[in-house]
Length: 249
Length: 249
DNA sequence: AGGAATGTGGCATGAATACGCAAAAACATG
DNA sequence: CATGTTTTTGCGTATTCATGCCACATTCCT
Image (cartoon, rainbow over all chains, first blue to last red):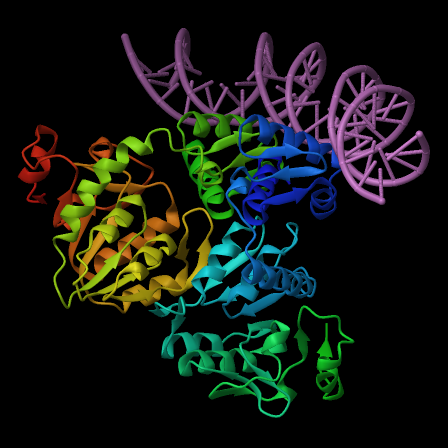
């Protein structure tokens, strides 16, 4: 990994999370903490960030005021994202939906990962593009402005022709009896096809969506291989899903 | 392998992967690292890439700091964008490339316009999505991180099946004899196909790109219907293009 | 206050690079 | 076509750069 490349990655992380820890970065990028410190120094000299003990802060850190719930659920999604990112290994083909949870997964991808990510979600693609070494494939079709995702027959037929190792779905409702559900018909269609086109299906959701329903059916519990929430796997609310044979992380 | 050929290949690799390593390239092209280094030097002097220890990076890494000239040219591009947007009428199918000039056009679109915009450029799609009433279609394929555009056989075959009313191209070099040229092979291919798939071809460029050349040929002057720059149509530098039968705005 | 974490400066090492030079190739020119 | 010139390339050497490691100072947290 080139020096500039590394610094660009650090800068990206800083702007994303508003802070970075030297120790974490060094572990993530697999260089010594000395190197990270030197990078932070240089970036600080260039005015790109603010160096502090133990790491660095984004320059816009002052403006950010932590406001209750939204940041709270953000943190939960970060946890989910990290668990999800850990599942991906070099060389995999990964199909993903959109949604904030998936975005957090994209941000948590280790910089050395070499895999191929396929998605129709424009925000997700934007995140993937930030990554130094992964391949990014965009599914084309008509763009849904509110979902920021491509939908339509073309997108569906493209996904049908894919055979992915993993499929990550950010879902808004999951129930032990009814499975996962969605409130947008076209997105539900897309997710169905994505499930069919993948070896393993990973559902990511914050725990408050567990045992909730929406009008349109996506898939049954039996179609899901792995469920990721911000809770530890032994949380009581997850128990029925484990009993149903799902691997819960 | 010729020198120019080699440098075009290097440039292509840089635009594709955002980075190249001298050692890898030297092995790949089977020339000494010195030669690669000299090539990278030259390309760096020409502003085509950024030379760093161990290899080179594409400009998109530093686009934060790369804004030296662009603030100035931003205003010119706004003018171009307004002229371009005025050409579009309700019901049209419009095919566009990427590039900052095209973005400015997207921003200048009248809010009441009802048309369909088709593009593989992610920044352009993002702009189109802001618009209240236009239809947006994304061309899917592998994403070039540098150009932020989808490129590949799939994208090309999709564009081939389109019959658009208008095609807007942001171009980096135009010359009265050689026509429009480009430094990325795959983007040149895309633009060629886009030209073939459209009734009318509109080229948008700031005037400083007029009478400049890049290695890869896109199309001849005769293939262009309309040329838009920030200058008034009677500017002397535009005269040869008017004489060549192009409508200059 | 005191232990742990973090930062500083120096130094060693291997990788990347600049530079000079010479051989080879391409080009020009009469 | 022969000859001289320029360009391009590869190699050896000295130099610079990037990085990790170490000893020691500083700061942080309780």
